[in-house]
Image (tube, rainbow, N blue to C red; front, side):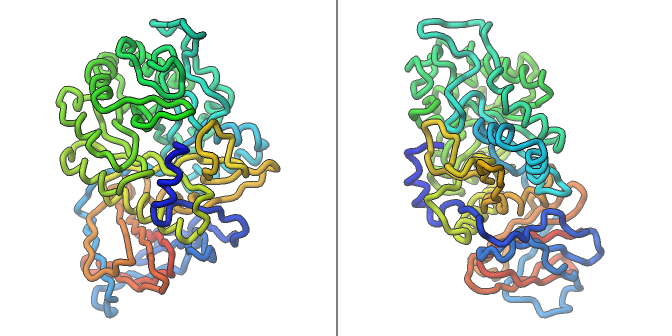
Length: 485
């Protein structure tokens, strides 16, 4: 996150999310049975907050033509599989881990983690992003190899993840116990200061003379986490590489990132048979040329699994621009935050679903992640960055937990679209421009449709399933997830 971009975020139409404090508490994280023949289970969150992940009456699947189709007809072709989904979730920042580990008692902590990560009784988050060292949401600045000014450590003999062992690692171990297959992505905000042109964690670039040592830094990190029983599925090379800030940050233009991957990090991972994915860019939608320029280099591209994006600038269609040129490379959406700059639940629900969850999936993303999983009632702890960001949940000083709109937007995907699911082809025939949708088939064969009604009126639609169909009327300013076998 970056403080300077808050104004940009605020200008993004209905940008981001608002707290649901005071809203009716009728969310229903444990769904009814979805295996009934010829029935579609439905969960709804409405902009009015009258329904918060609320189960609706099941819909009957009938023979096509049994009922007159509505004007809004959606054809879904489950035989045409598109990208494989890897998961949905948010970032377990240092601040989030501290609040969960230190500000909740054991009972509260267990209940929250079960609510967030358990597939049956909770919303089943399946993907986490963590920070390699400090970010703008940590208790202090640090990396894993901090030295007094003027000293260097080419062999990384003083490398240590001790600071992560206070809160982050214990929380991650609890998460892994609940969700053993969870995917974890790790991202550095800065290399150690002694490796940088600035000589400090805030700003500056990585000196070329330390490219080799910094590549080893990644390997030591992966090994240290593996020793703790935590597997890192992917790393991105640098968070927001085109932004330098007062908090840990590091500029790395596309030519530098290409050089680092092509001549150092990629060959080292290959030589050590490291399977952790390497992701490019990890910055806003407005610069798709950055990852494209690296993927255009065949020697660098061979080491790269895909490109990661944030939503503080540009348009979600940038992800499709990269996919169209490199369809064999993955696309990942890795960060956006809600905040006090946007206080309308309904507008935020619609913006997040349209752009981040439905939008990124329809533009080939394999995941969708929000920023801080938890912050306190003063939007912290913070570390010289965004001063009014909001977490997926808010943990108050007294241990009270408020589920914010981000919780519900994640839930409409994470609880129902499981890792290994495929997005499938869904054609729109005369569908209202106020209805947006995306469809999936899960590994167990269950089918999922997530649909958003941007309009202020009820909208009826019909889903065509070959010889069968079903119809549903979605509330105004609402999102619905529909599941059937």
